[in-house]
Structures are given as structure tokens and as C-alpha cells.
Image (cartoon, rainbow, N blue to C red; front, side, top):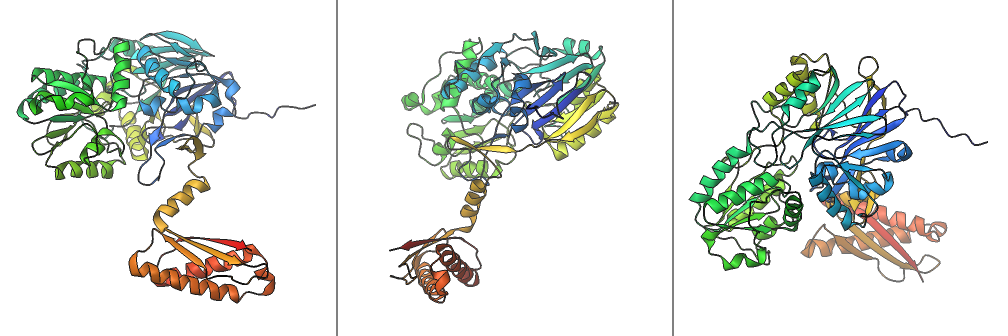
Length: 559
């Protein structure tokens, strides 16, 4: 008789667990699990993006192995809002989960487009939940509370069980004039706080920022005046998902008798989803990039993708003079109306230098008031703690230093328990004091072409080494006795050029030939022995001559 193995991590009927697999100890790539009564609930499933340290890898996501092994116990996936770091992994990982999806209308519109790109639009069913809606998923009674953020329809999620209520804030801020969508539902938060909240799992991004995060309305007033002072073409780089910012830029353009063009496919996709749900309704249709050249310089504002220096986005191509329809030159200006995501500093600096070399004026939030964050500064965090009054604070959506500072802030706010967690730490919220009761595997998956591979895979590590170390390729043509039939053929990639390269190839060929000819008869009959001896000879010579340790590969051909 076959007996199913016991799952030691299956949540019991009298416990409530919190398990982050992404987004704890890092900013982005969010994946949170809540366990109760034998079931798991997932909140958000996002991505982060690769950089210089991940050659050819653009999209990275949490490894959901823990929950895919327990997919039959996964009751559903609730999405707090439509940012990539909260929904971007759904098209790639949903087939491993095969669970119901829940989202408010705008988020659902964005997600449907993403699912359609991979052929899942009819398989991955989305249940639309209205703003402030209440619904049940497995053993959890859920309620959405409206907040403000840099995208429409950001929601906190209240999870209720017999062990107490948990507030999962998602990304949020307190914007008194968000311009698109309502203000945060303070009444609902205060009402929740009157009901003895067990725990709050809360955004930590701006815990080091004093005061308030600022209002979108202030950015609008600043951009109207800034565009008025500029005389040439104006391009504005911002996140495509920041619908309020798109509305602000369009308003600033119209107030200065300029038309608005969108440059970048993601902007068109996001504005389509916005209009589908009643946002941007007061704005006229945007101009396409093909028609920009028909307008005088002082009559156009272009909203462009690529504010983070993404090499294939619109701004990078414009900066290099490679965009097929858009040209910026002396007298024009680019406004960077977004924050710098940690890790993108070098790419953004390259982009801004490219633009400056073309005579374009670069304007950032260091120069003008052109951006406000979508995350809460310290005063807003304090206000949220005063409203909700949780027994346990669990900071997430922050690096280790953010988490530690947020724990200290929560304690200053008289929260009885504040716990620092990282990905893979299983935290028991109830019963008893909050306690990390287990650690489970967590990791990252990379989208490598059309395949998902672990970031720790040999393929990724090898590619990284190739990018830094260079390659020596050696071909040996031998008979079956082990006699070399021609000189070794040597190729160097990413190492030398000109005369030094020619000299190195000759020297390596000589050293390899000498080494192979000195092998015993037994080793000469073994391809592996021959290849390894040749590899070591070439690598040792190159290290001694050039102080480098390139990847070295040897091909043995027998004829």
C-alpha cells in the first residue's frame, strides 16, 4: 500500500503562517504565501529585471518550487495591483500553479493582455473583484481596501481567519490628491484598526525618507511651468504603468498648446487598459510616433518608455540616434519623471550621457519637482501604524537595511512585536508569539530565451564567466594512434587583438603540440586525457603571459 509522504509544512487548522518567497530582503519580485487550515493563499507574483551582471537575462522571478509541489493546496492568487513586480511572473509561472486568479478591473485588463501574449487567455481565468470588494478564497475571508500608489487601483488585502485579521498592504502611499482614482480609504483602515488586527505586512521601500512622499498634484503644477519654459521638443521618460503621471504630462502639454505622442509599445498597452476602465477619459487620442515629425518642435510632448536606461526601450534608441521615427537634438529636452530603481544607476547614466552628447537638456528630480514616489515615507508609515494598530509588524518590500530600519520604526510606534523576515522564512503569526518556525527553499528563476532556468544553474554561471574571462578554443586533428595530423587550431574570443593575439595563438599552438606529443601511448588513445592535457597547457601559458584565466575548450577530432 502506497502512503503519501507527510507534508511537515502543511498549515494546521489552528495556525496562521506567512511565507515570503520573493520581495522580502529585496525590492521587487514579490511572492507572498499565507497558510491556514491546510490551504495556501498567494498574494502577488512578480518579476525583477536583469542588468549588467546577468548577461542576456532580462526577466528574473521567484522560484515557486515550494508551492508548486503543493499546488493542490493552493486556493488562489490575489493580485494587489498591476505593476510588473507584482504580476509580471504570472504568464510564466501560472501553468505550474493552475490556480484561480483574483484582481480588480484595471489589473485584470493589464493581466489579460499579458496572458494573451503566451496563449493563456482562455486557460487562466481571472475573477474580477470590485474596489473595496469582499470575497472568500479557501479558508480565508478577504477584503480589499483602496490605497494610493503610482498606478490605478492599488489595494491592501485584509485576510480574516478565526485566528485574527492580517493586513497585507501591497505598495501604497497616502496621496491627498492622486488625480487618478480615489484617495486612500482612511475610514476602512481605522475601522480595521478598531478590530484588534493580528499583523500588518507592510511596504518598506521609503522607510529612510523623512516626512511625506508628496502628491501627484504637486508634480502636475511643476510640470506645467517647466514645459512652459522649454522651447524645443520635450520628451518625458516615465513608467508606462503610472497612469496618473501620463495624465499629468498630457495636462501639462495641453496647458502649453502642445500635442502628446506616445513612444513605446508598453505605453500604448497600458493606456488601452486604462481607457477600458474609464481612466484618461478626458484626454484626446494620443499621437503615434510616426506622426511626430509633422509637428513643430514647440508643439509636441513625447512620453517615452525607457526611463531606467533599458537598452531596447525608446529613450535608449533615441539617445543613440537609432530610433526610426524620433530625433532629439540641440535645444530639445528630456525630463526623467521617475525614480531610479536600485541597480539601474549605470544604465541611466549612460542614457543621460548619450542625450547630453547630442545637445539635449537632461532634467531630473534633482533639478525640478518632476517626480514623487509611490511608496510611503516615514510620516505615512507612522500614520498607518496609528490607524491599524497591529499586534505584529512584518516589514517586506525592502532590502535588509530597509527591513531592519522598519522593524525599529514599528517598535517606536508601540507595536508589541516586530519581526524581520527574508525569503524562505516561514513565520507563524498565530497561535502564540510570532516565530520563524522553518526555512524552506527559495531562489530565482531566469527567463533565458523561452526557458525558465535557476539563476544558480551552470548555464547562467558559465555565461557570466564567459562575459568576464574570455574564451580559448582549440581544435586537435589526430589519428587513432594519437599523432597530430596538423598544427593545433587556436581561436581567442574576447581576449586580445592584433599582433598580441597572433603571437598568443602561435605560442598556445606550440605549447599544446608539445604537451600532446609528450603523452603516453595509453593517454593518447583517450580523447578526454588528450583534451584535458591540452586545456591545462593553454590555460597555464595564457595565465603566465597575460595574468588571465580564460574559459578553455578543446575539441579532439579523430580521422
